[in-house]
Image (cartoon, rainbow, N blue to C red; front, side, top):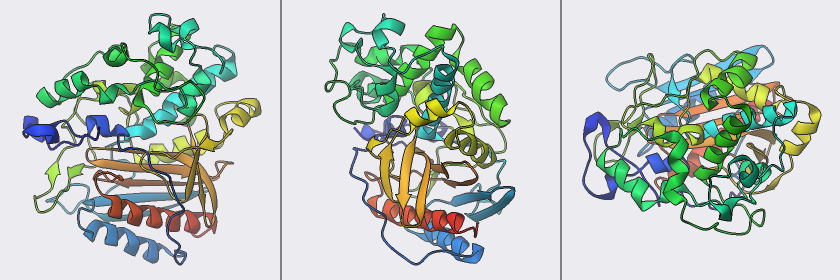
Length: 396
């Protein structure tokens, strides 16, 4: 199921359009991630800016884009468009935004930090840590959840869940009961036998972290991630409000005018799988530490970087493969590690070199994925690869 919404300001359009994107945190059907189209490297900030401006002008393109390139202590910010339509305010690094499925990397950071401390093991099972969940799921391990090889059915594809969102996009879910929507379903396949992206995986990861620590997931994020990496503008809200200032996210579906969907949906329905609000500056700090292994020792880093075939949603630049809570993007200029995400109003990429020294965050203010806007996604991935090349060649 693919869900996208134009239900801002409590207005819910008829039919499936009103359900469309809460489930779209990573909703589009998985397609193989081929190498991004070849093209000349982008070597200067004006070249990069022109590419962002072309994305903003494209049919269905985002009203605003901001990219942050960091090389050691040097930061380059490239932007196009505006933070809010009807104003001339440019996107800023301290603007808040929904990071969608990039939040899955945060649940990976919490889980792997607990593995590093010995509170969790990668071979711990759902049955041993979350025995209330269906017996059919009990053999699934933490490693398989983080690898998206668990076979857990995706709760965001539940008809009951979709109907609730259709009726009230701002409905307040009990985030810790989201898996109840698929509790009667069997596993989609034998755990560990193949890759299939599922929003349920990261809900289970957060619940396992809470179970072993007896600590709310939100507090674990603060203690294990935010404080360690100096994140001051990042949070996991339950409601629909955005903290000021923020990048306004839009449903851009020509010929209809863009509609602000920044506050259309309650984040309680995606929680650890996609509910985090952050800023371009904080995402830069996070991915440098996370991809660079700053949160745990080399043993855990090696486990995290056991790659299997699989692409993030939407696919990142170049050829994609998946580790534990992280993806590898092999571009024509080199490899970076990170995560993507998309939901109504926002599309995200954060990536860094394996040593964490160089990083790129790339944030757009409309939803772009293979199902909704396949051509624009191809264009965006090509631009993202150009940015990666500029970063790796030391031009960012």
